[in-house]
Length: 398
Image (cartoon, rainbow, N blue to C red; front, side, top):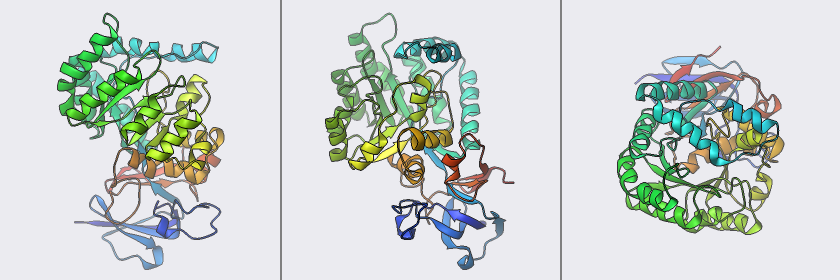
């Protein structure tokens, strides 16, 4: 098995707290486990060694990072990539004052149903490549734009070509021509049977205009009975019971969390359920940003994801989400990077990614910058100089 020594790393983010130095202004709480003048040895698809460059063992190939910073590959734990069509006009309308509602989902459903498998696969491949070029090396992909037995199953089959973290979101909205009661029966019956072989997770859009708490509870229970882990969209558009339901059920993560009352925050802190925040959505919908500072100060674990989708947030840039989290959600730069890497991995119940440590998957991002701080310090600037995914260079270095 060949090995690669990545050396000359000016600043390495490991996400291993044991590496932390006290009184480091770049990482005040030590969560990033920064190592200066560092090196990493990759063997096959995994990390074999991490430490100071002066102590590095020999390897078959040497790559000199030239003093640049290296971070773990981003772990994007919430995306909707299997779709067809365009909703740019809807975005333009929102920017001129029209409010966002979930109704636009049905527009994408019609276009997605009309697309061929080949067209959907090609579209997902383009978006995944776009994400990879920006440093995302692990991601979750949801269905949810098929809303029929056939189209939900094929959407998940397409998604499974790109990731094992696929999520059945048949409960996105109730399609035209049926009642909520009949559609829940379909989602928990034939649709779930067809979707389950292609999915790891099940999700529900628990929101006014979509599915209420009782419906969400029933759908998640059916998913559990079919071997799927539960996730939840909650409290995106209004205050509601979705976040409390996620905490009650002990879900790994609950996503959006835009409108939170104090008891929602307490429920998250007590349950350990991760709050996955999606700042690109608020950028695109002009809803208020979640108060990440309040969540973190209350002891809630916070992740960041892109929610890349054609309607409420068509960005694939985790770096943009980091910058927004720092500027608009009051996260520190260290908290935001940790949320987009290690916490994204935890939100997917993964322990093999999001961390640079021996035995973990060799997913590294080389930045054209001396420190991870530039991700928020230089927003909008393409800073990715190289990407290794599973030990293989997938984005060329300089």
